[in-house]
Amino acid sequence: MDQLNGGRPSEFIPDVAWLEDYELGFAPLDDDHKNMVKLVNQTAGALNAGDMHQAFTLITRFIEASRYHFEHEERILRESQYPDIDHHVRYHEMLLATADDVAHQCETVKQFDFVRESFLVLVGCLLDDVIKGDAEFASHLVEAGLVDP
Ligand SMILES: [Fe+2]
Ligand SMILES: [Fe+2]
Image (cartoon, rainbow, N blue to C red; front, side):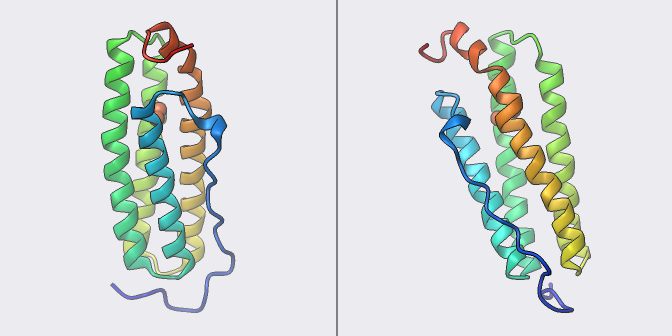
């Protein structure tokens, strides 16, 4: 696959910072989230460098890590009888669909701006899932005895 043609990206994608507020206090899920943020930032780095081949490789790694994480998280939520699981699973599906779009665009679209737009939607999904979505079940993990209060 070629590197990006047609000039440098018009605007750089900033890194997603990992904040302490994002921590659920449950290491198996927190570690997955940190890894997902790391892979998203590495993908942003490749996009900023205009290297679509590397961006595709990294976003594919991100998708694999996300699938693994979502299966794991959904299993925990199911086993501990989290009441709002269906709603939360839809967040996960939305993120995976958006990440697939980004991967597809890295492969086929050579214009940075199109990929950047989809990528920023993906970053929004990741923050919505990790911050808003997962924060909603933080108290459930305490009630289920998985996290110390
Ligand atoms: Fe999660
Ligand atoms: Fe989640």
